[in-house]
Length: 107
Length: 181
Image (cartoon, rainbow over all chains, first blue to last red; front, side):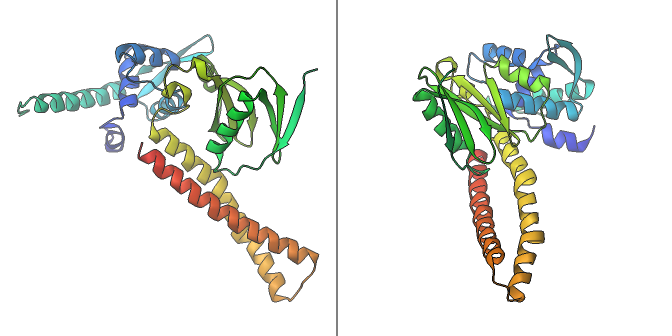
């Protein structure tokens, strides 16, 4: 994997993580924001400008790809590269969590 | 025909936060912004007073249908564009949280906007100043020419210096503020 991409995205911002995580299914920007609000019980809101900027950047970096258009809304989905990045990030978060519980990770 | 008024107000590229607040105050007094025209004319229309959040996004022409659709989905009304800025508004009552009343929910994307302003507005301004204005003023000064034109040029040079310093300092401060968010 491209080291540059890895350096930019791992660790990820909270918004970035949720956007990529939600895009395991095809989804448009506003749909993602609704889903994130439900998932986090309203603790995290991703504003329109941040959503648009993050989607554009992730598409340009090949983490997500345009799938189709529905009612003038672009639907995106995660790419294999995006899935790889998400996996790295998930492992990192898991390690943080386990370490915070006093566990030692020796993988 | 509804009642209208036009106001003259000068905001630099670094004053967008002040501009947002000023527009919000106008709307609360029953004046909604209908259009912005160069160089600094704001036309308002009479409307019922309402607490309306105004937000400006700097895109410098890089927008598409998807962009506007997304903002409309979020409840933002886009009603005008001016000099690379997109003007949005949303009733404060509809904003469910603080972030819902903002265009950007993290400091990082605000920093990106400031960077874009510097790159596409400040740098060209600086280049014009250093490559055109300053040399021609110095030439006039050297030649000992003192006429109306030289004074105009002199005033222009002073205005440019003020503008560059003011915007430079302010944008740097904004960037710092957003980075700490």
